[in-house]
Length: 579
Image: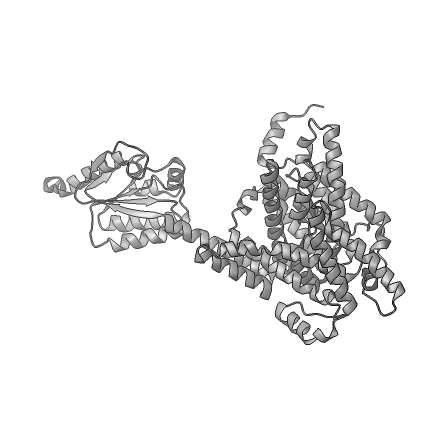
């Protein structure tokens, strides 16, 4: 059976979904396979403690963190648009997942994650991958720093071994509880945390290829186990103490009930997961592209991430996204195709099936130290210092996003952060869009690279208004205000020069229509010049050509000035007016 290549190409152009795995396998060889296997094994080992820690910090069983890394990591590599992206649970989701579980339970988390996956797939299908990258950097830094501080705060209890239960989810009440219970610190737990922290910090100084988190977990787990046997007074809470024996079987897929009431209730949380996942995965892919020289298909990446998040909830998993630290570990160790990511998932699967009983002995204090280092690395404090040398508007956006993330809720922070991004964009476009007024003489080459300057003589009674930029609702209001301010000098003809208007929206059309009608009532002619083809189509579709006459929409200023001068001359000629 033959394949219709024309239909396939049309489908591919309509839906930008081309997983990198299949193109990477062309010209694949044994040398590349060896490098990918080594990188995959290393990344799998690095991902193990992080998957467990992120699962626990999110409020789920540690095995769920591993299941998410296995299934989500495999799908992201198999269907994603990046050659080196490693997917799995990340620190960015800890806050939102914890809050969703607190409000709606595990069932609510599953539905929110599923809905987020659908949103991500739709983002990719509608080619929004490139748009996500234009979210202002101060907003991303504010999110990330706020999440980092929140993660740090959630680990104080285990780091100091306070043994507190029912800790408030909000930042300020949480710290209030910590400060009022600081006398209940456990010295064995604190010693375990400090030793773990030192191992994680010092390991890279010995070798950057050694995973400090895993080394700390192995050494500290062994040390606390031996001390617990030798010293009756030495006891540190472990994963097994808190969660019981870890299962070693992949959970059976299970469904969940969705109705409109549930969708309405969980849609804000799902949107937060989707936007956060899109930002983090594309940011990770962009960093990776800068190192490897490859090029991520951002729309395919969003679809792959979406399918991963649609799938993992059926196995009890938590949200999945691209993980920058694991992706960079993959690159550093030679991984250059999605095969390395698939190997990483298989390594985690083998650990899950055969080594889970050992996970029960890992101290919670050790995992707290791991997550504190993750929070420190996420904080980006050097970047924050750099942004404080930027314009005040960027600093304000960073501070607002940071405070909203920490004090209130990540969902609110993302919604207001995106709103701030839109407002800042509109403000800057509006500020950079100039509206110029000319009379008597007009330099045709002004604002261009042309060396020959042709000066047109504009007749008395003709005013020329030039819009330098897109004619959307913000600029339309600015243009309307300028027109009103010049109403005192009543011209005979108004030329609106639109050579630099790349698009016009509904508000711009409405204001333009009002201007034409009010001008016509006062006997003022309106001529449009330099109208681009795409803008002319919009004007014709809105009936502007019928309102002023199609001959009054000119493609060049020369024609518009000649027409306006003739109209002005006719208007001043008494004989013509009597006729």
